Image 1 (cartoon, rainbow over the protein chains, first blue to last red):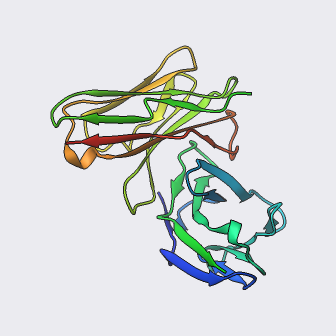
Image 2: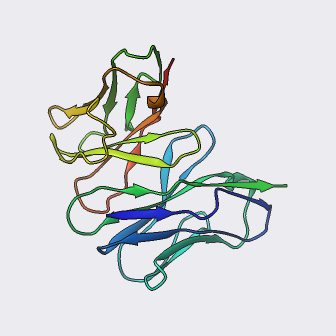
Amino acid sequence: AQSVTQLDSQVPVFEEAPVELRCNYSSSVSVYLFWYVQYPNQGLQLLLKYLSGSTLVESINGFEAEFNKSQTSFHLRKPSVHISDTAEYFCAVSPNTGGFKTIFGAGTRLFVKA
Amino acid sequence: GAGVSQSPSNKVTEKGKDVELRCDPISGHTALYWYRQSLGQGLEFLIYFQGNSAPDKSGLPSDRFSAERTGGSVSTLTIQRTQQEDSAVYLCASSLNRRAETQYFGPGTRLLVL
C-alpha cells in the first residue's frame, strides 16, 4: 500500500520569492511520482512526473522536483514564483508494478502575494 | 479534441435518494479513474477501470457505492441511499492504458446531499 503526506496545507509567499512544497511518500514497492496542479476554477492537470532516470524533473513553467529515494521525498520547488502560480498542488504516487491505483496527498494551497 | 466530460456538473439530492454520476473519457483512453474530493481533503481514490474491468475496487467507501463501465467508454458511478457525508466533488480521469500515463481530469460533479 502507498500513502502520501504533504506537510503544508497552505504556503503563502511573496511574488518573486522561492518556494518549496514538500511531499513525502510511503510504499512497499517502487513507485512513480507526480505533481498535479489545480488552478482556481479549473480542473487538475499534470505539472511534472518522475518515472526513472534523472532524479530531477522539470516543468515547462519553471517548477522542478527531485526524487530522493533515501528520504522518500519528492519536493516541488520554484526559484521565483509569479502571481499566476497561485493554485493547489497535489503530490501523487502510483506503483510501478501491479495495477494503476494512484494515491494523492491532501494538497498544498500556494498563495502568491504581490 | 474533447477532454473528459462529466455530468451533471452539480447535483443536489435528499438524504436516502440514489444518484448516478456520469463520465465520458477521452476517446481512445482505456484507463478510467474515479476520485472523491471532500472540502479541505485531498483526492480519495475510489475505483479504476482497465477497459470494462475494475481490477481494484478497494477505494469504494461502502457497498452503497458502485461503478460500471460499458463499451470501454462511458462510466457511471452510482451512490445508493445517499448520506450527508457523501457530499463532495466527484472527479473522473482517464489515461492511455499504460503505466504511469498522465491522467486527464474532468471538471467534476459537485454533489450536495441535504
